[in-house]
Amino acid sequence: MIASQEGGVEIEEVAARSPEAIHRELLDPLVGLAAFQGRRLAFKLGLPKELINKAVAFFSALVRAFHDCDASLAEINPLVVTKAGDLVALDAKMSVDDNALFRQAAVRAYRDENEEDPREREAAKFDLSYIALSGNIGCMVNGAGLAMATMDIVKYAGGEPANFLDVGGGANAEKVREAFKILLADASVRTIFINIFGGILRCDVFAEGVVAAAREIGLKVPLVVRMEGTNVDRGKQILAESGLAIQTAADMGRRRPPRRRRRAGCAIMRTRAKERRERREAREFTSRADAHRSTAAQRPRARGRNQMSILIDRSTRVIVQGITGATGQFHAQACREYGTQIVGGVTPGKGGTDLEGIPIFDTVEQAVRATGATATCIFVPHRSRPIAIMEAAAAELPLAICITEGASQPSIWCAARATSKARRRVSSARTAPG
Image (cartoon, rainbow, N blue to C red; front, top):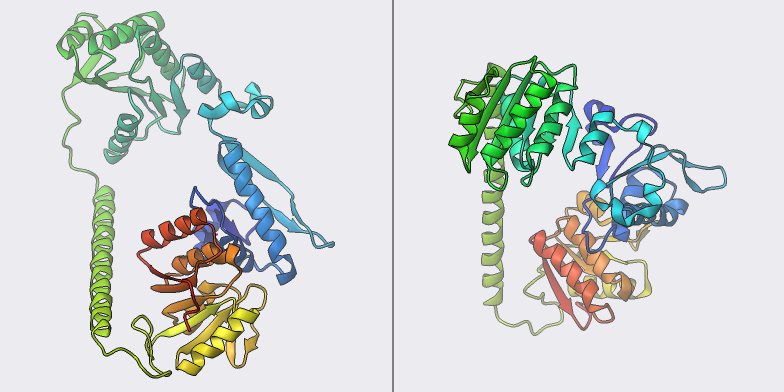
């Protein structure tokens, strides 16, 4: 989910001009938009505190609509706050996955063929995947993966593809002929490049379709065909004996890329080197943390009231989620009496205040950024505990301590899944951590 205060303009313009103004939340498909993620977006958008809960409900409804309608895009632009204090989607648009329209009768009723590209509409009649692009090299391929790779290679060589056209693995001569007609109907196409791997679609069947279409329509642009796979020799023979100006290719060539492509390749290599370095640093951090815990575990057992556990020592900077509640206040004070370093608390809507000198923040992310916290103790209502654990993991806190009693097992499983993906540790206690 993406949000920005720059309403009323294209998101691409905002990304180019001020990328820091775009806020993102990654959604777990099993959970949807977690409440803490909605609050985090609402605060980043600068909404008044009295509208935070309304915003969370609004954002959650948008995510549900996205899933329920099988959408590939659900966009509200702009979102406005009325004088009465309500959130209203002033304008919106949705894109729905064509493959899911069979179960979206209400969405199908809105279809207006006059708004569609006639070539894409014609391609759909023959079960062809066609998307018009802005280049001048028409591409015909079987298989979406091969189609993407072919367009990448065309770009890499300095060309510009005019379309994405996938005839599919089970195409026959008729489908190939119709695909060829669609390609030639595009006036911007100056060259046609066909890249086929013969499996279910045999090369000889494909060649027959190409020859039939070229003769029926009239070949007026250069045509290059590369094919490999089943009956490839017979396919090449059909093309050679057709008498048409068809050039066949055995491979994709090894031409040295233009200088700008080499620079792009160097940038990719630098990015990958950075990623490898970050992974190495993460492994080293984990090793140091494991060594620290191993050393701590070998210490004599604490006997006095003012001794620390093996997970939290005097150097650990702890925040308390739910600190303004009765339970949070009681245990925060108990932890301080034990000598725990409580550096902050989190209660949505009470950011900017304090509790006995402990600063309070609206989100865990804000608290971690301001205090440098390395652990959290969670004292929120039991239904909110899984979400609180997920918020701590999203804020990259290495350790979260939470009483999980009262929370449902499926929700705790989702929280555990989030922490394992983030490589964070959760200590689940039945009694208070203090």
